[in-house]
Amino acid sequence: MILNYNKYKSFLLHLLLTVGIIFAFNLSVIAQQSDNQLALRYYQNKEFDKAAEIYEKLYNETGFKNHRDYYLRCLNEMRDFETAEKFLKNELRRNRNDLYLLVDMGMVYLSTGRVKESEEKFNRAIEIASSSRNNIIAVANSFQRYRNYNWAEKVYIEGRRKTGESFDYELGNIYFMQRNYEKMIKSYVNHLKSSPQRLNIVQSRLQHIISREIDENFDAVIERVLLEEIQKNPQISVLTELLIWQFIQTGKFDVALNQLIAIDRRGKSDGSGVYEFGEILTNNAEYDLAINAYQYLLDKGEKHPIYPFAYVNYLNTLFLKNTKVLEPDINELKKLEDMLKEALSIVSRRESFSVIYALAQVKAFYLEKYDEAIDILLTEIDNKRLNPENESIAKLLLGDIYMLNENPWEATLIYAQVEKSNSESPIGHEARFKRAKLAYYTGEFEWAQAQLVVLKASTSKLIANDALDLSVFISDNYNLDTTEIPMKLFARADFLIFTKQYNDALLILDSISNMFPTHKLKDNILYRKANIYEQTDNYHKASELYNEVATTFYYDILADKALYRYAILQEKLNQYHNAEDAYFKLISEYPASIYAVEARRNLRELNAKNLIN
Image (cartoon, rainbow, N blue to C red):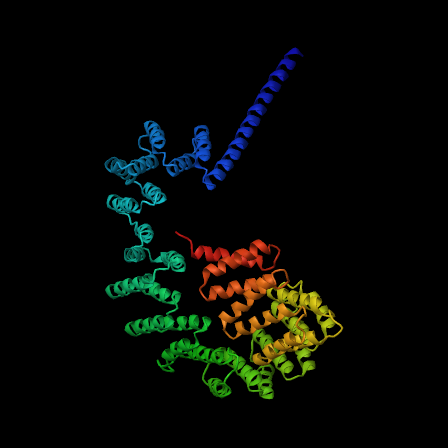
């Protein structure tokens, strides 16, 4: 029994001792974390003497290199090179081959005018590092932290000589720091010659530079060097890809297209590069250039494999060019109508749907040939020529045309058909949303709300967001006054936007502002105007209005959405700084916004593009 008691007592003492050690250790860690935060605060406030004292203490306790680095930075900021030299000598006695210490000591010597001694330390560091790629990069980074780019360059050049490995990408980054653009781009080119799969990395690096560089010669140097390299090495396709990308970044779409066509002609290629660039041009609203791209492909002849695809895209681009404007040219649209009808006898059945869809839109929305547009769509639907998805899309357009032709009953029936046959899919949700919009356009706000309440839980994120926006808008503005006139006028303006009658919509929106200057719809009016200008590719005017909504009505319900649209358009205008600022503002000031998640994702993508690799 006594033996058991002694064992228990021994175990208890051991346990208490262990707990005491753990507790003491945890207290020590907590104290160090607190000291580290305090030291960093002193450092950021430029109270370097106080920060140095704590960092020295922390380094002595932990031996962490980060604490040592901050201690030396503080001494450097205070110009206390005597203390730094004494400290480093002591450290080097314990580890004479520490690469970082050698660079640090060399910088102390350089700062105190002892150039020969500094070079001895630097050369020693390079000599030790040159046997390992990781060490070469580590030493070069140490020099970069001191902004000593000349020695960082020497590290990579010597490393290349000793190891035979390429450091072209790293050298390109150094040359940028030195503002030696010619050497920079040549280094990136050499990197791509050996590693063409790194094109995205080089593009991200250049995009970061382009978005921040203010030197007017920068773009010209990049383009000149790339053209020279392509002339010497026309077989290296990655250089051509980079040059075309560069032209696109700087808005020189016409130069990029000419370059692609020249390459296609020289190589007697299949035209796929020009075709893909035509799609890029269309997406960037460069419609005339896109048409030129497709025309070049059409000139290859009807027997060329790419002809039918280029022809369809040519017509679709013509459609966009003629409709994405405030006042479409009716004569041009009539010409387009004839071309689309002719195309139906040329293109394959697989390619015909987009032509039919465009033709129905032109007839209904712009030429007021409602019956003809309806007949075209009904023929396709009744003859079972369409796959299920395209049939539903055609029916939605048919419903839109019935609505446009002031036949809401037929529109409702068509939308209901699509909703029933696609009840659990996004296109079914879209059909229900169109039914709710139809009720809204006709002033049946309460019935519209009943439909929108269901749609707010839609699995289709886009539809759910749109339904939520319209539902909140109706709740926020309906029955605010003794009269429903402002709300009904606004709904009418929305209908005119839907029917592409943009100028008439703008007139109604202005009339609401004039007749009801104190009405709460003011921010909505500005927002709808911005929508119109965005839909007609006037991104500058749209951005201005979105920014006005977000700034003037920062407290209201549309502020976050307007800020998000502003950021999106700033990206399209290549104003990446403005886009980043807007996304960050949205995340920080409207954290509960449904657009905050998208803003974070877009901000991450922008940061990835601008990352210094």
